[in-house]
Length: 122
Image (cartoon, rainbow, N blue to C red; front, side, top):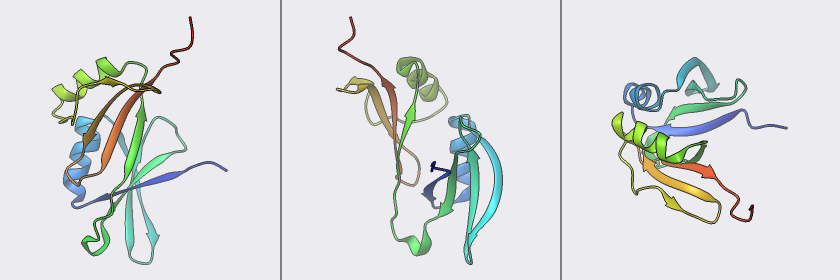
């Protein structure tokens, strides 16, 4: 088994596409009908078989996602994303797992930019 779709609940598809495509640099893949009344816009992430599925928050229920984005260079990506208009909640900081920085999208979904590091290696 593998993860194929990661749901991200949004308020407005146009604003969400602006964020994911223009600011984060992802690509729109397609649109699918997820169930009888839920359209899902698929955003291509690094893996050809995994997608973020943008879905409008049903009835304004307040659903939120937390997504961890892997990076090889947290500081570089942090500065690139800031230049693209992404507003971070904090500067990159060291955690037990590595270097990380968090930001939100316009709908309140939380993202962690993570450069995993093994601090036990010499």
